[in-house]
Every structure is written in C-alpha cells, then in structure tokens.
Amino acid sequence: MAKKEMEVVKGLDLQRYMGRWYEIASFPSRFQPKNGINTRATYTLKEDGTVNVLNETWTDGKRGYIEGTAYKADPSSDEAKLKVKFYVPPFLPIIPVVGDYWVLFIDDDYQYALIGQPTRKYLWILCRQNNLDEEIYNQLVQRAGDEGYDVSKLHKTPQTDPPPESEEGEKDTKGIWWIKSILGK
Image 1 (cartoon, rainbow, N blue to C red):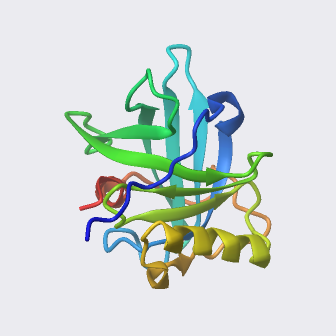
Image 2 (cartoon, rainbow, N blue to C red; image 1 turned 180 degrees about the horizontal axis):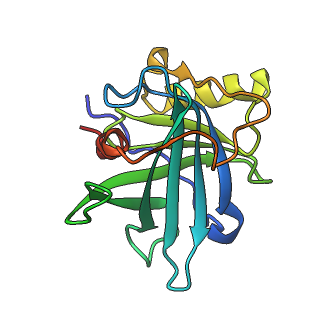
C-alpha cells in the first residue's frame, strides 16, 4: 500500500522562519556524531530570496559546522517544500549536494516546527528555545507518526543551558556528516 502524500505547511512566512532553531530531537544519522550536543540551525534570508543555512553541533567541546543554501523547490507553489544545497567538501566547494527539507508543521507563533523528508528516513523537531514542553513534543511525535514516520527512531538531542556561543570550542570543518544526513542516504 502506497503511503499517502505527506501534508506540508502552506504559506510559510520565510521572514518569520528565519533565525536560530535548536534541534530538540531527530532521527539519528549514522553520519552524525553519536555524541553531538547543542545541535542547531541558523537561517538568514538573503536578498535574492534564498536562505543561508548554518548547521552547528558540538562534539567533545569542538564545534562542527557547515553552511549551505535553502530555496523553494517550486517557487510557484505555496507549499513549504524546500531544497537545501551544500557543497562537498565544505572547504573546497566543488560538488553541490541537494536534499529535501519539508516543513510538516509549524505553530502560529513560529516557535516550534516538525521537518521531514519525502523518504521518511529523516525527521527533525526544532524549537526556538533549547527545550520544548513535553506535551507539545508528544503532539509533534504523534503528528509525525500519523504521517507515516517510524517515531521509535526519534532521539532527543542533548542541549546545555545556556547554549554555547558560536565562538566556543575549536573550529572543526569536517562537515561531511551534515551533508550525508541532509541527503537522506
């Protein structure tokens, strides 16, 4: 039986979506550091209407990050189906790698969001704060389950309070694991 098409957010206000989001939980990717903490994404709208994406995580006190670009898969559609493009390797931008980024749910105040991919292999729960009310968390998990995701794979991301500054930790440019997780391979 074919799974029904996932419901995605319509009319996403990109301006309001910009800024920092903390990863509350995700499907672990075998490419992501197992002990990565404080994972977060920062989105910045550019003049051409595309979005600069900065993904950061900390492993053993080292900051790993990668930057990319997000843009609407179909500019004429009001559905929040984005493409995210990273260059591999990050320090030698030769091969662009593109993945899907579908906003499945966002609250009216743009405080928490559920992000998935059409393959259903990847799922992220994001929040403006680095912690999310348990009841809201459970509602998002339920919603993901209704959309055909195997929510037993969800893994909560440890977040420290207060979150680290971007400058904290040694620079680590090995952003390869981000790329592979975005690709949904």
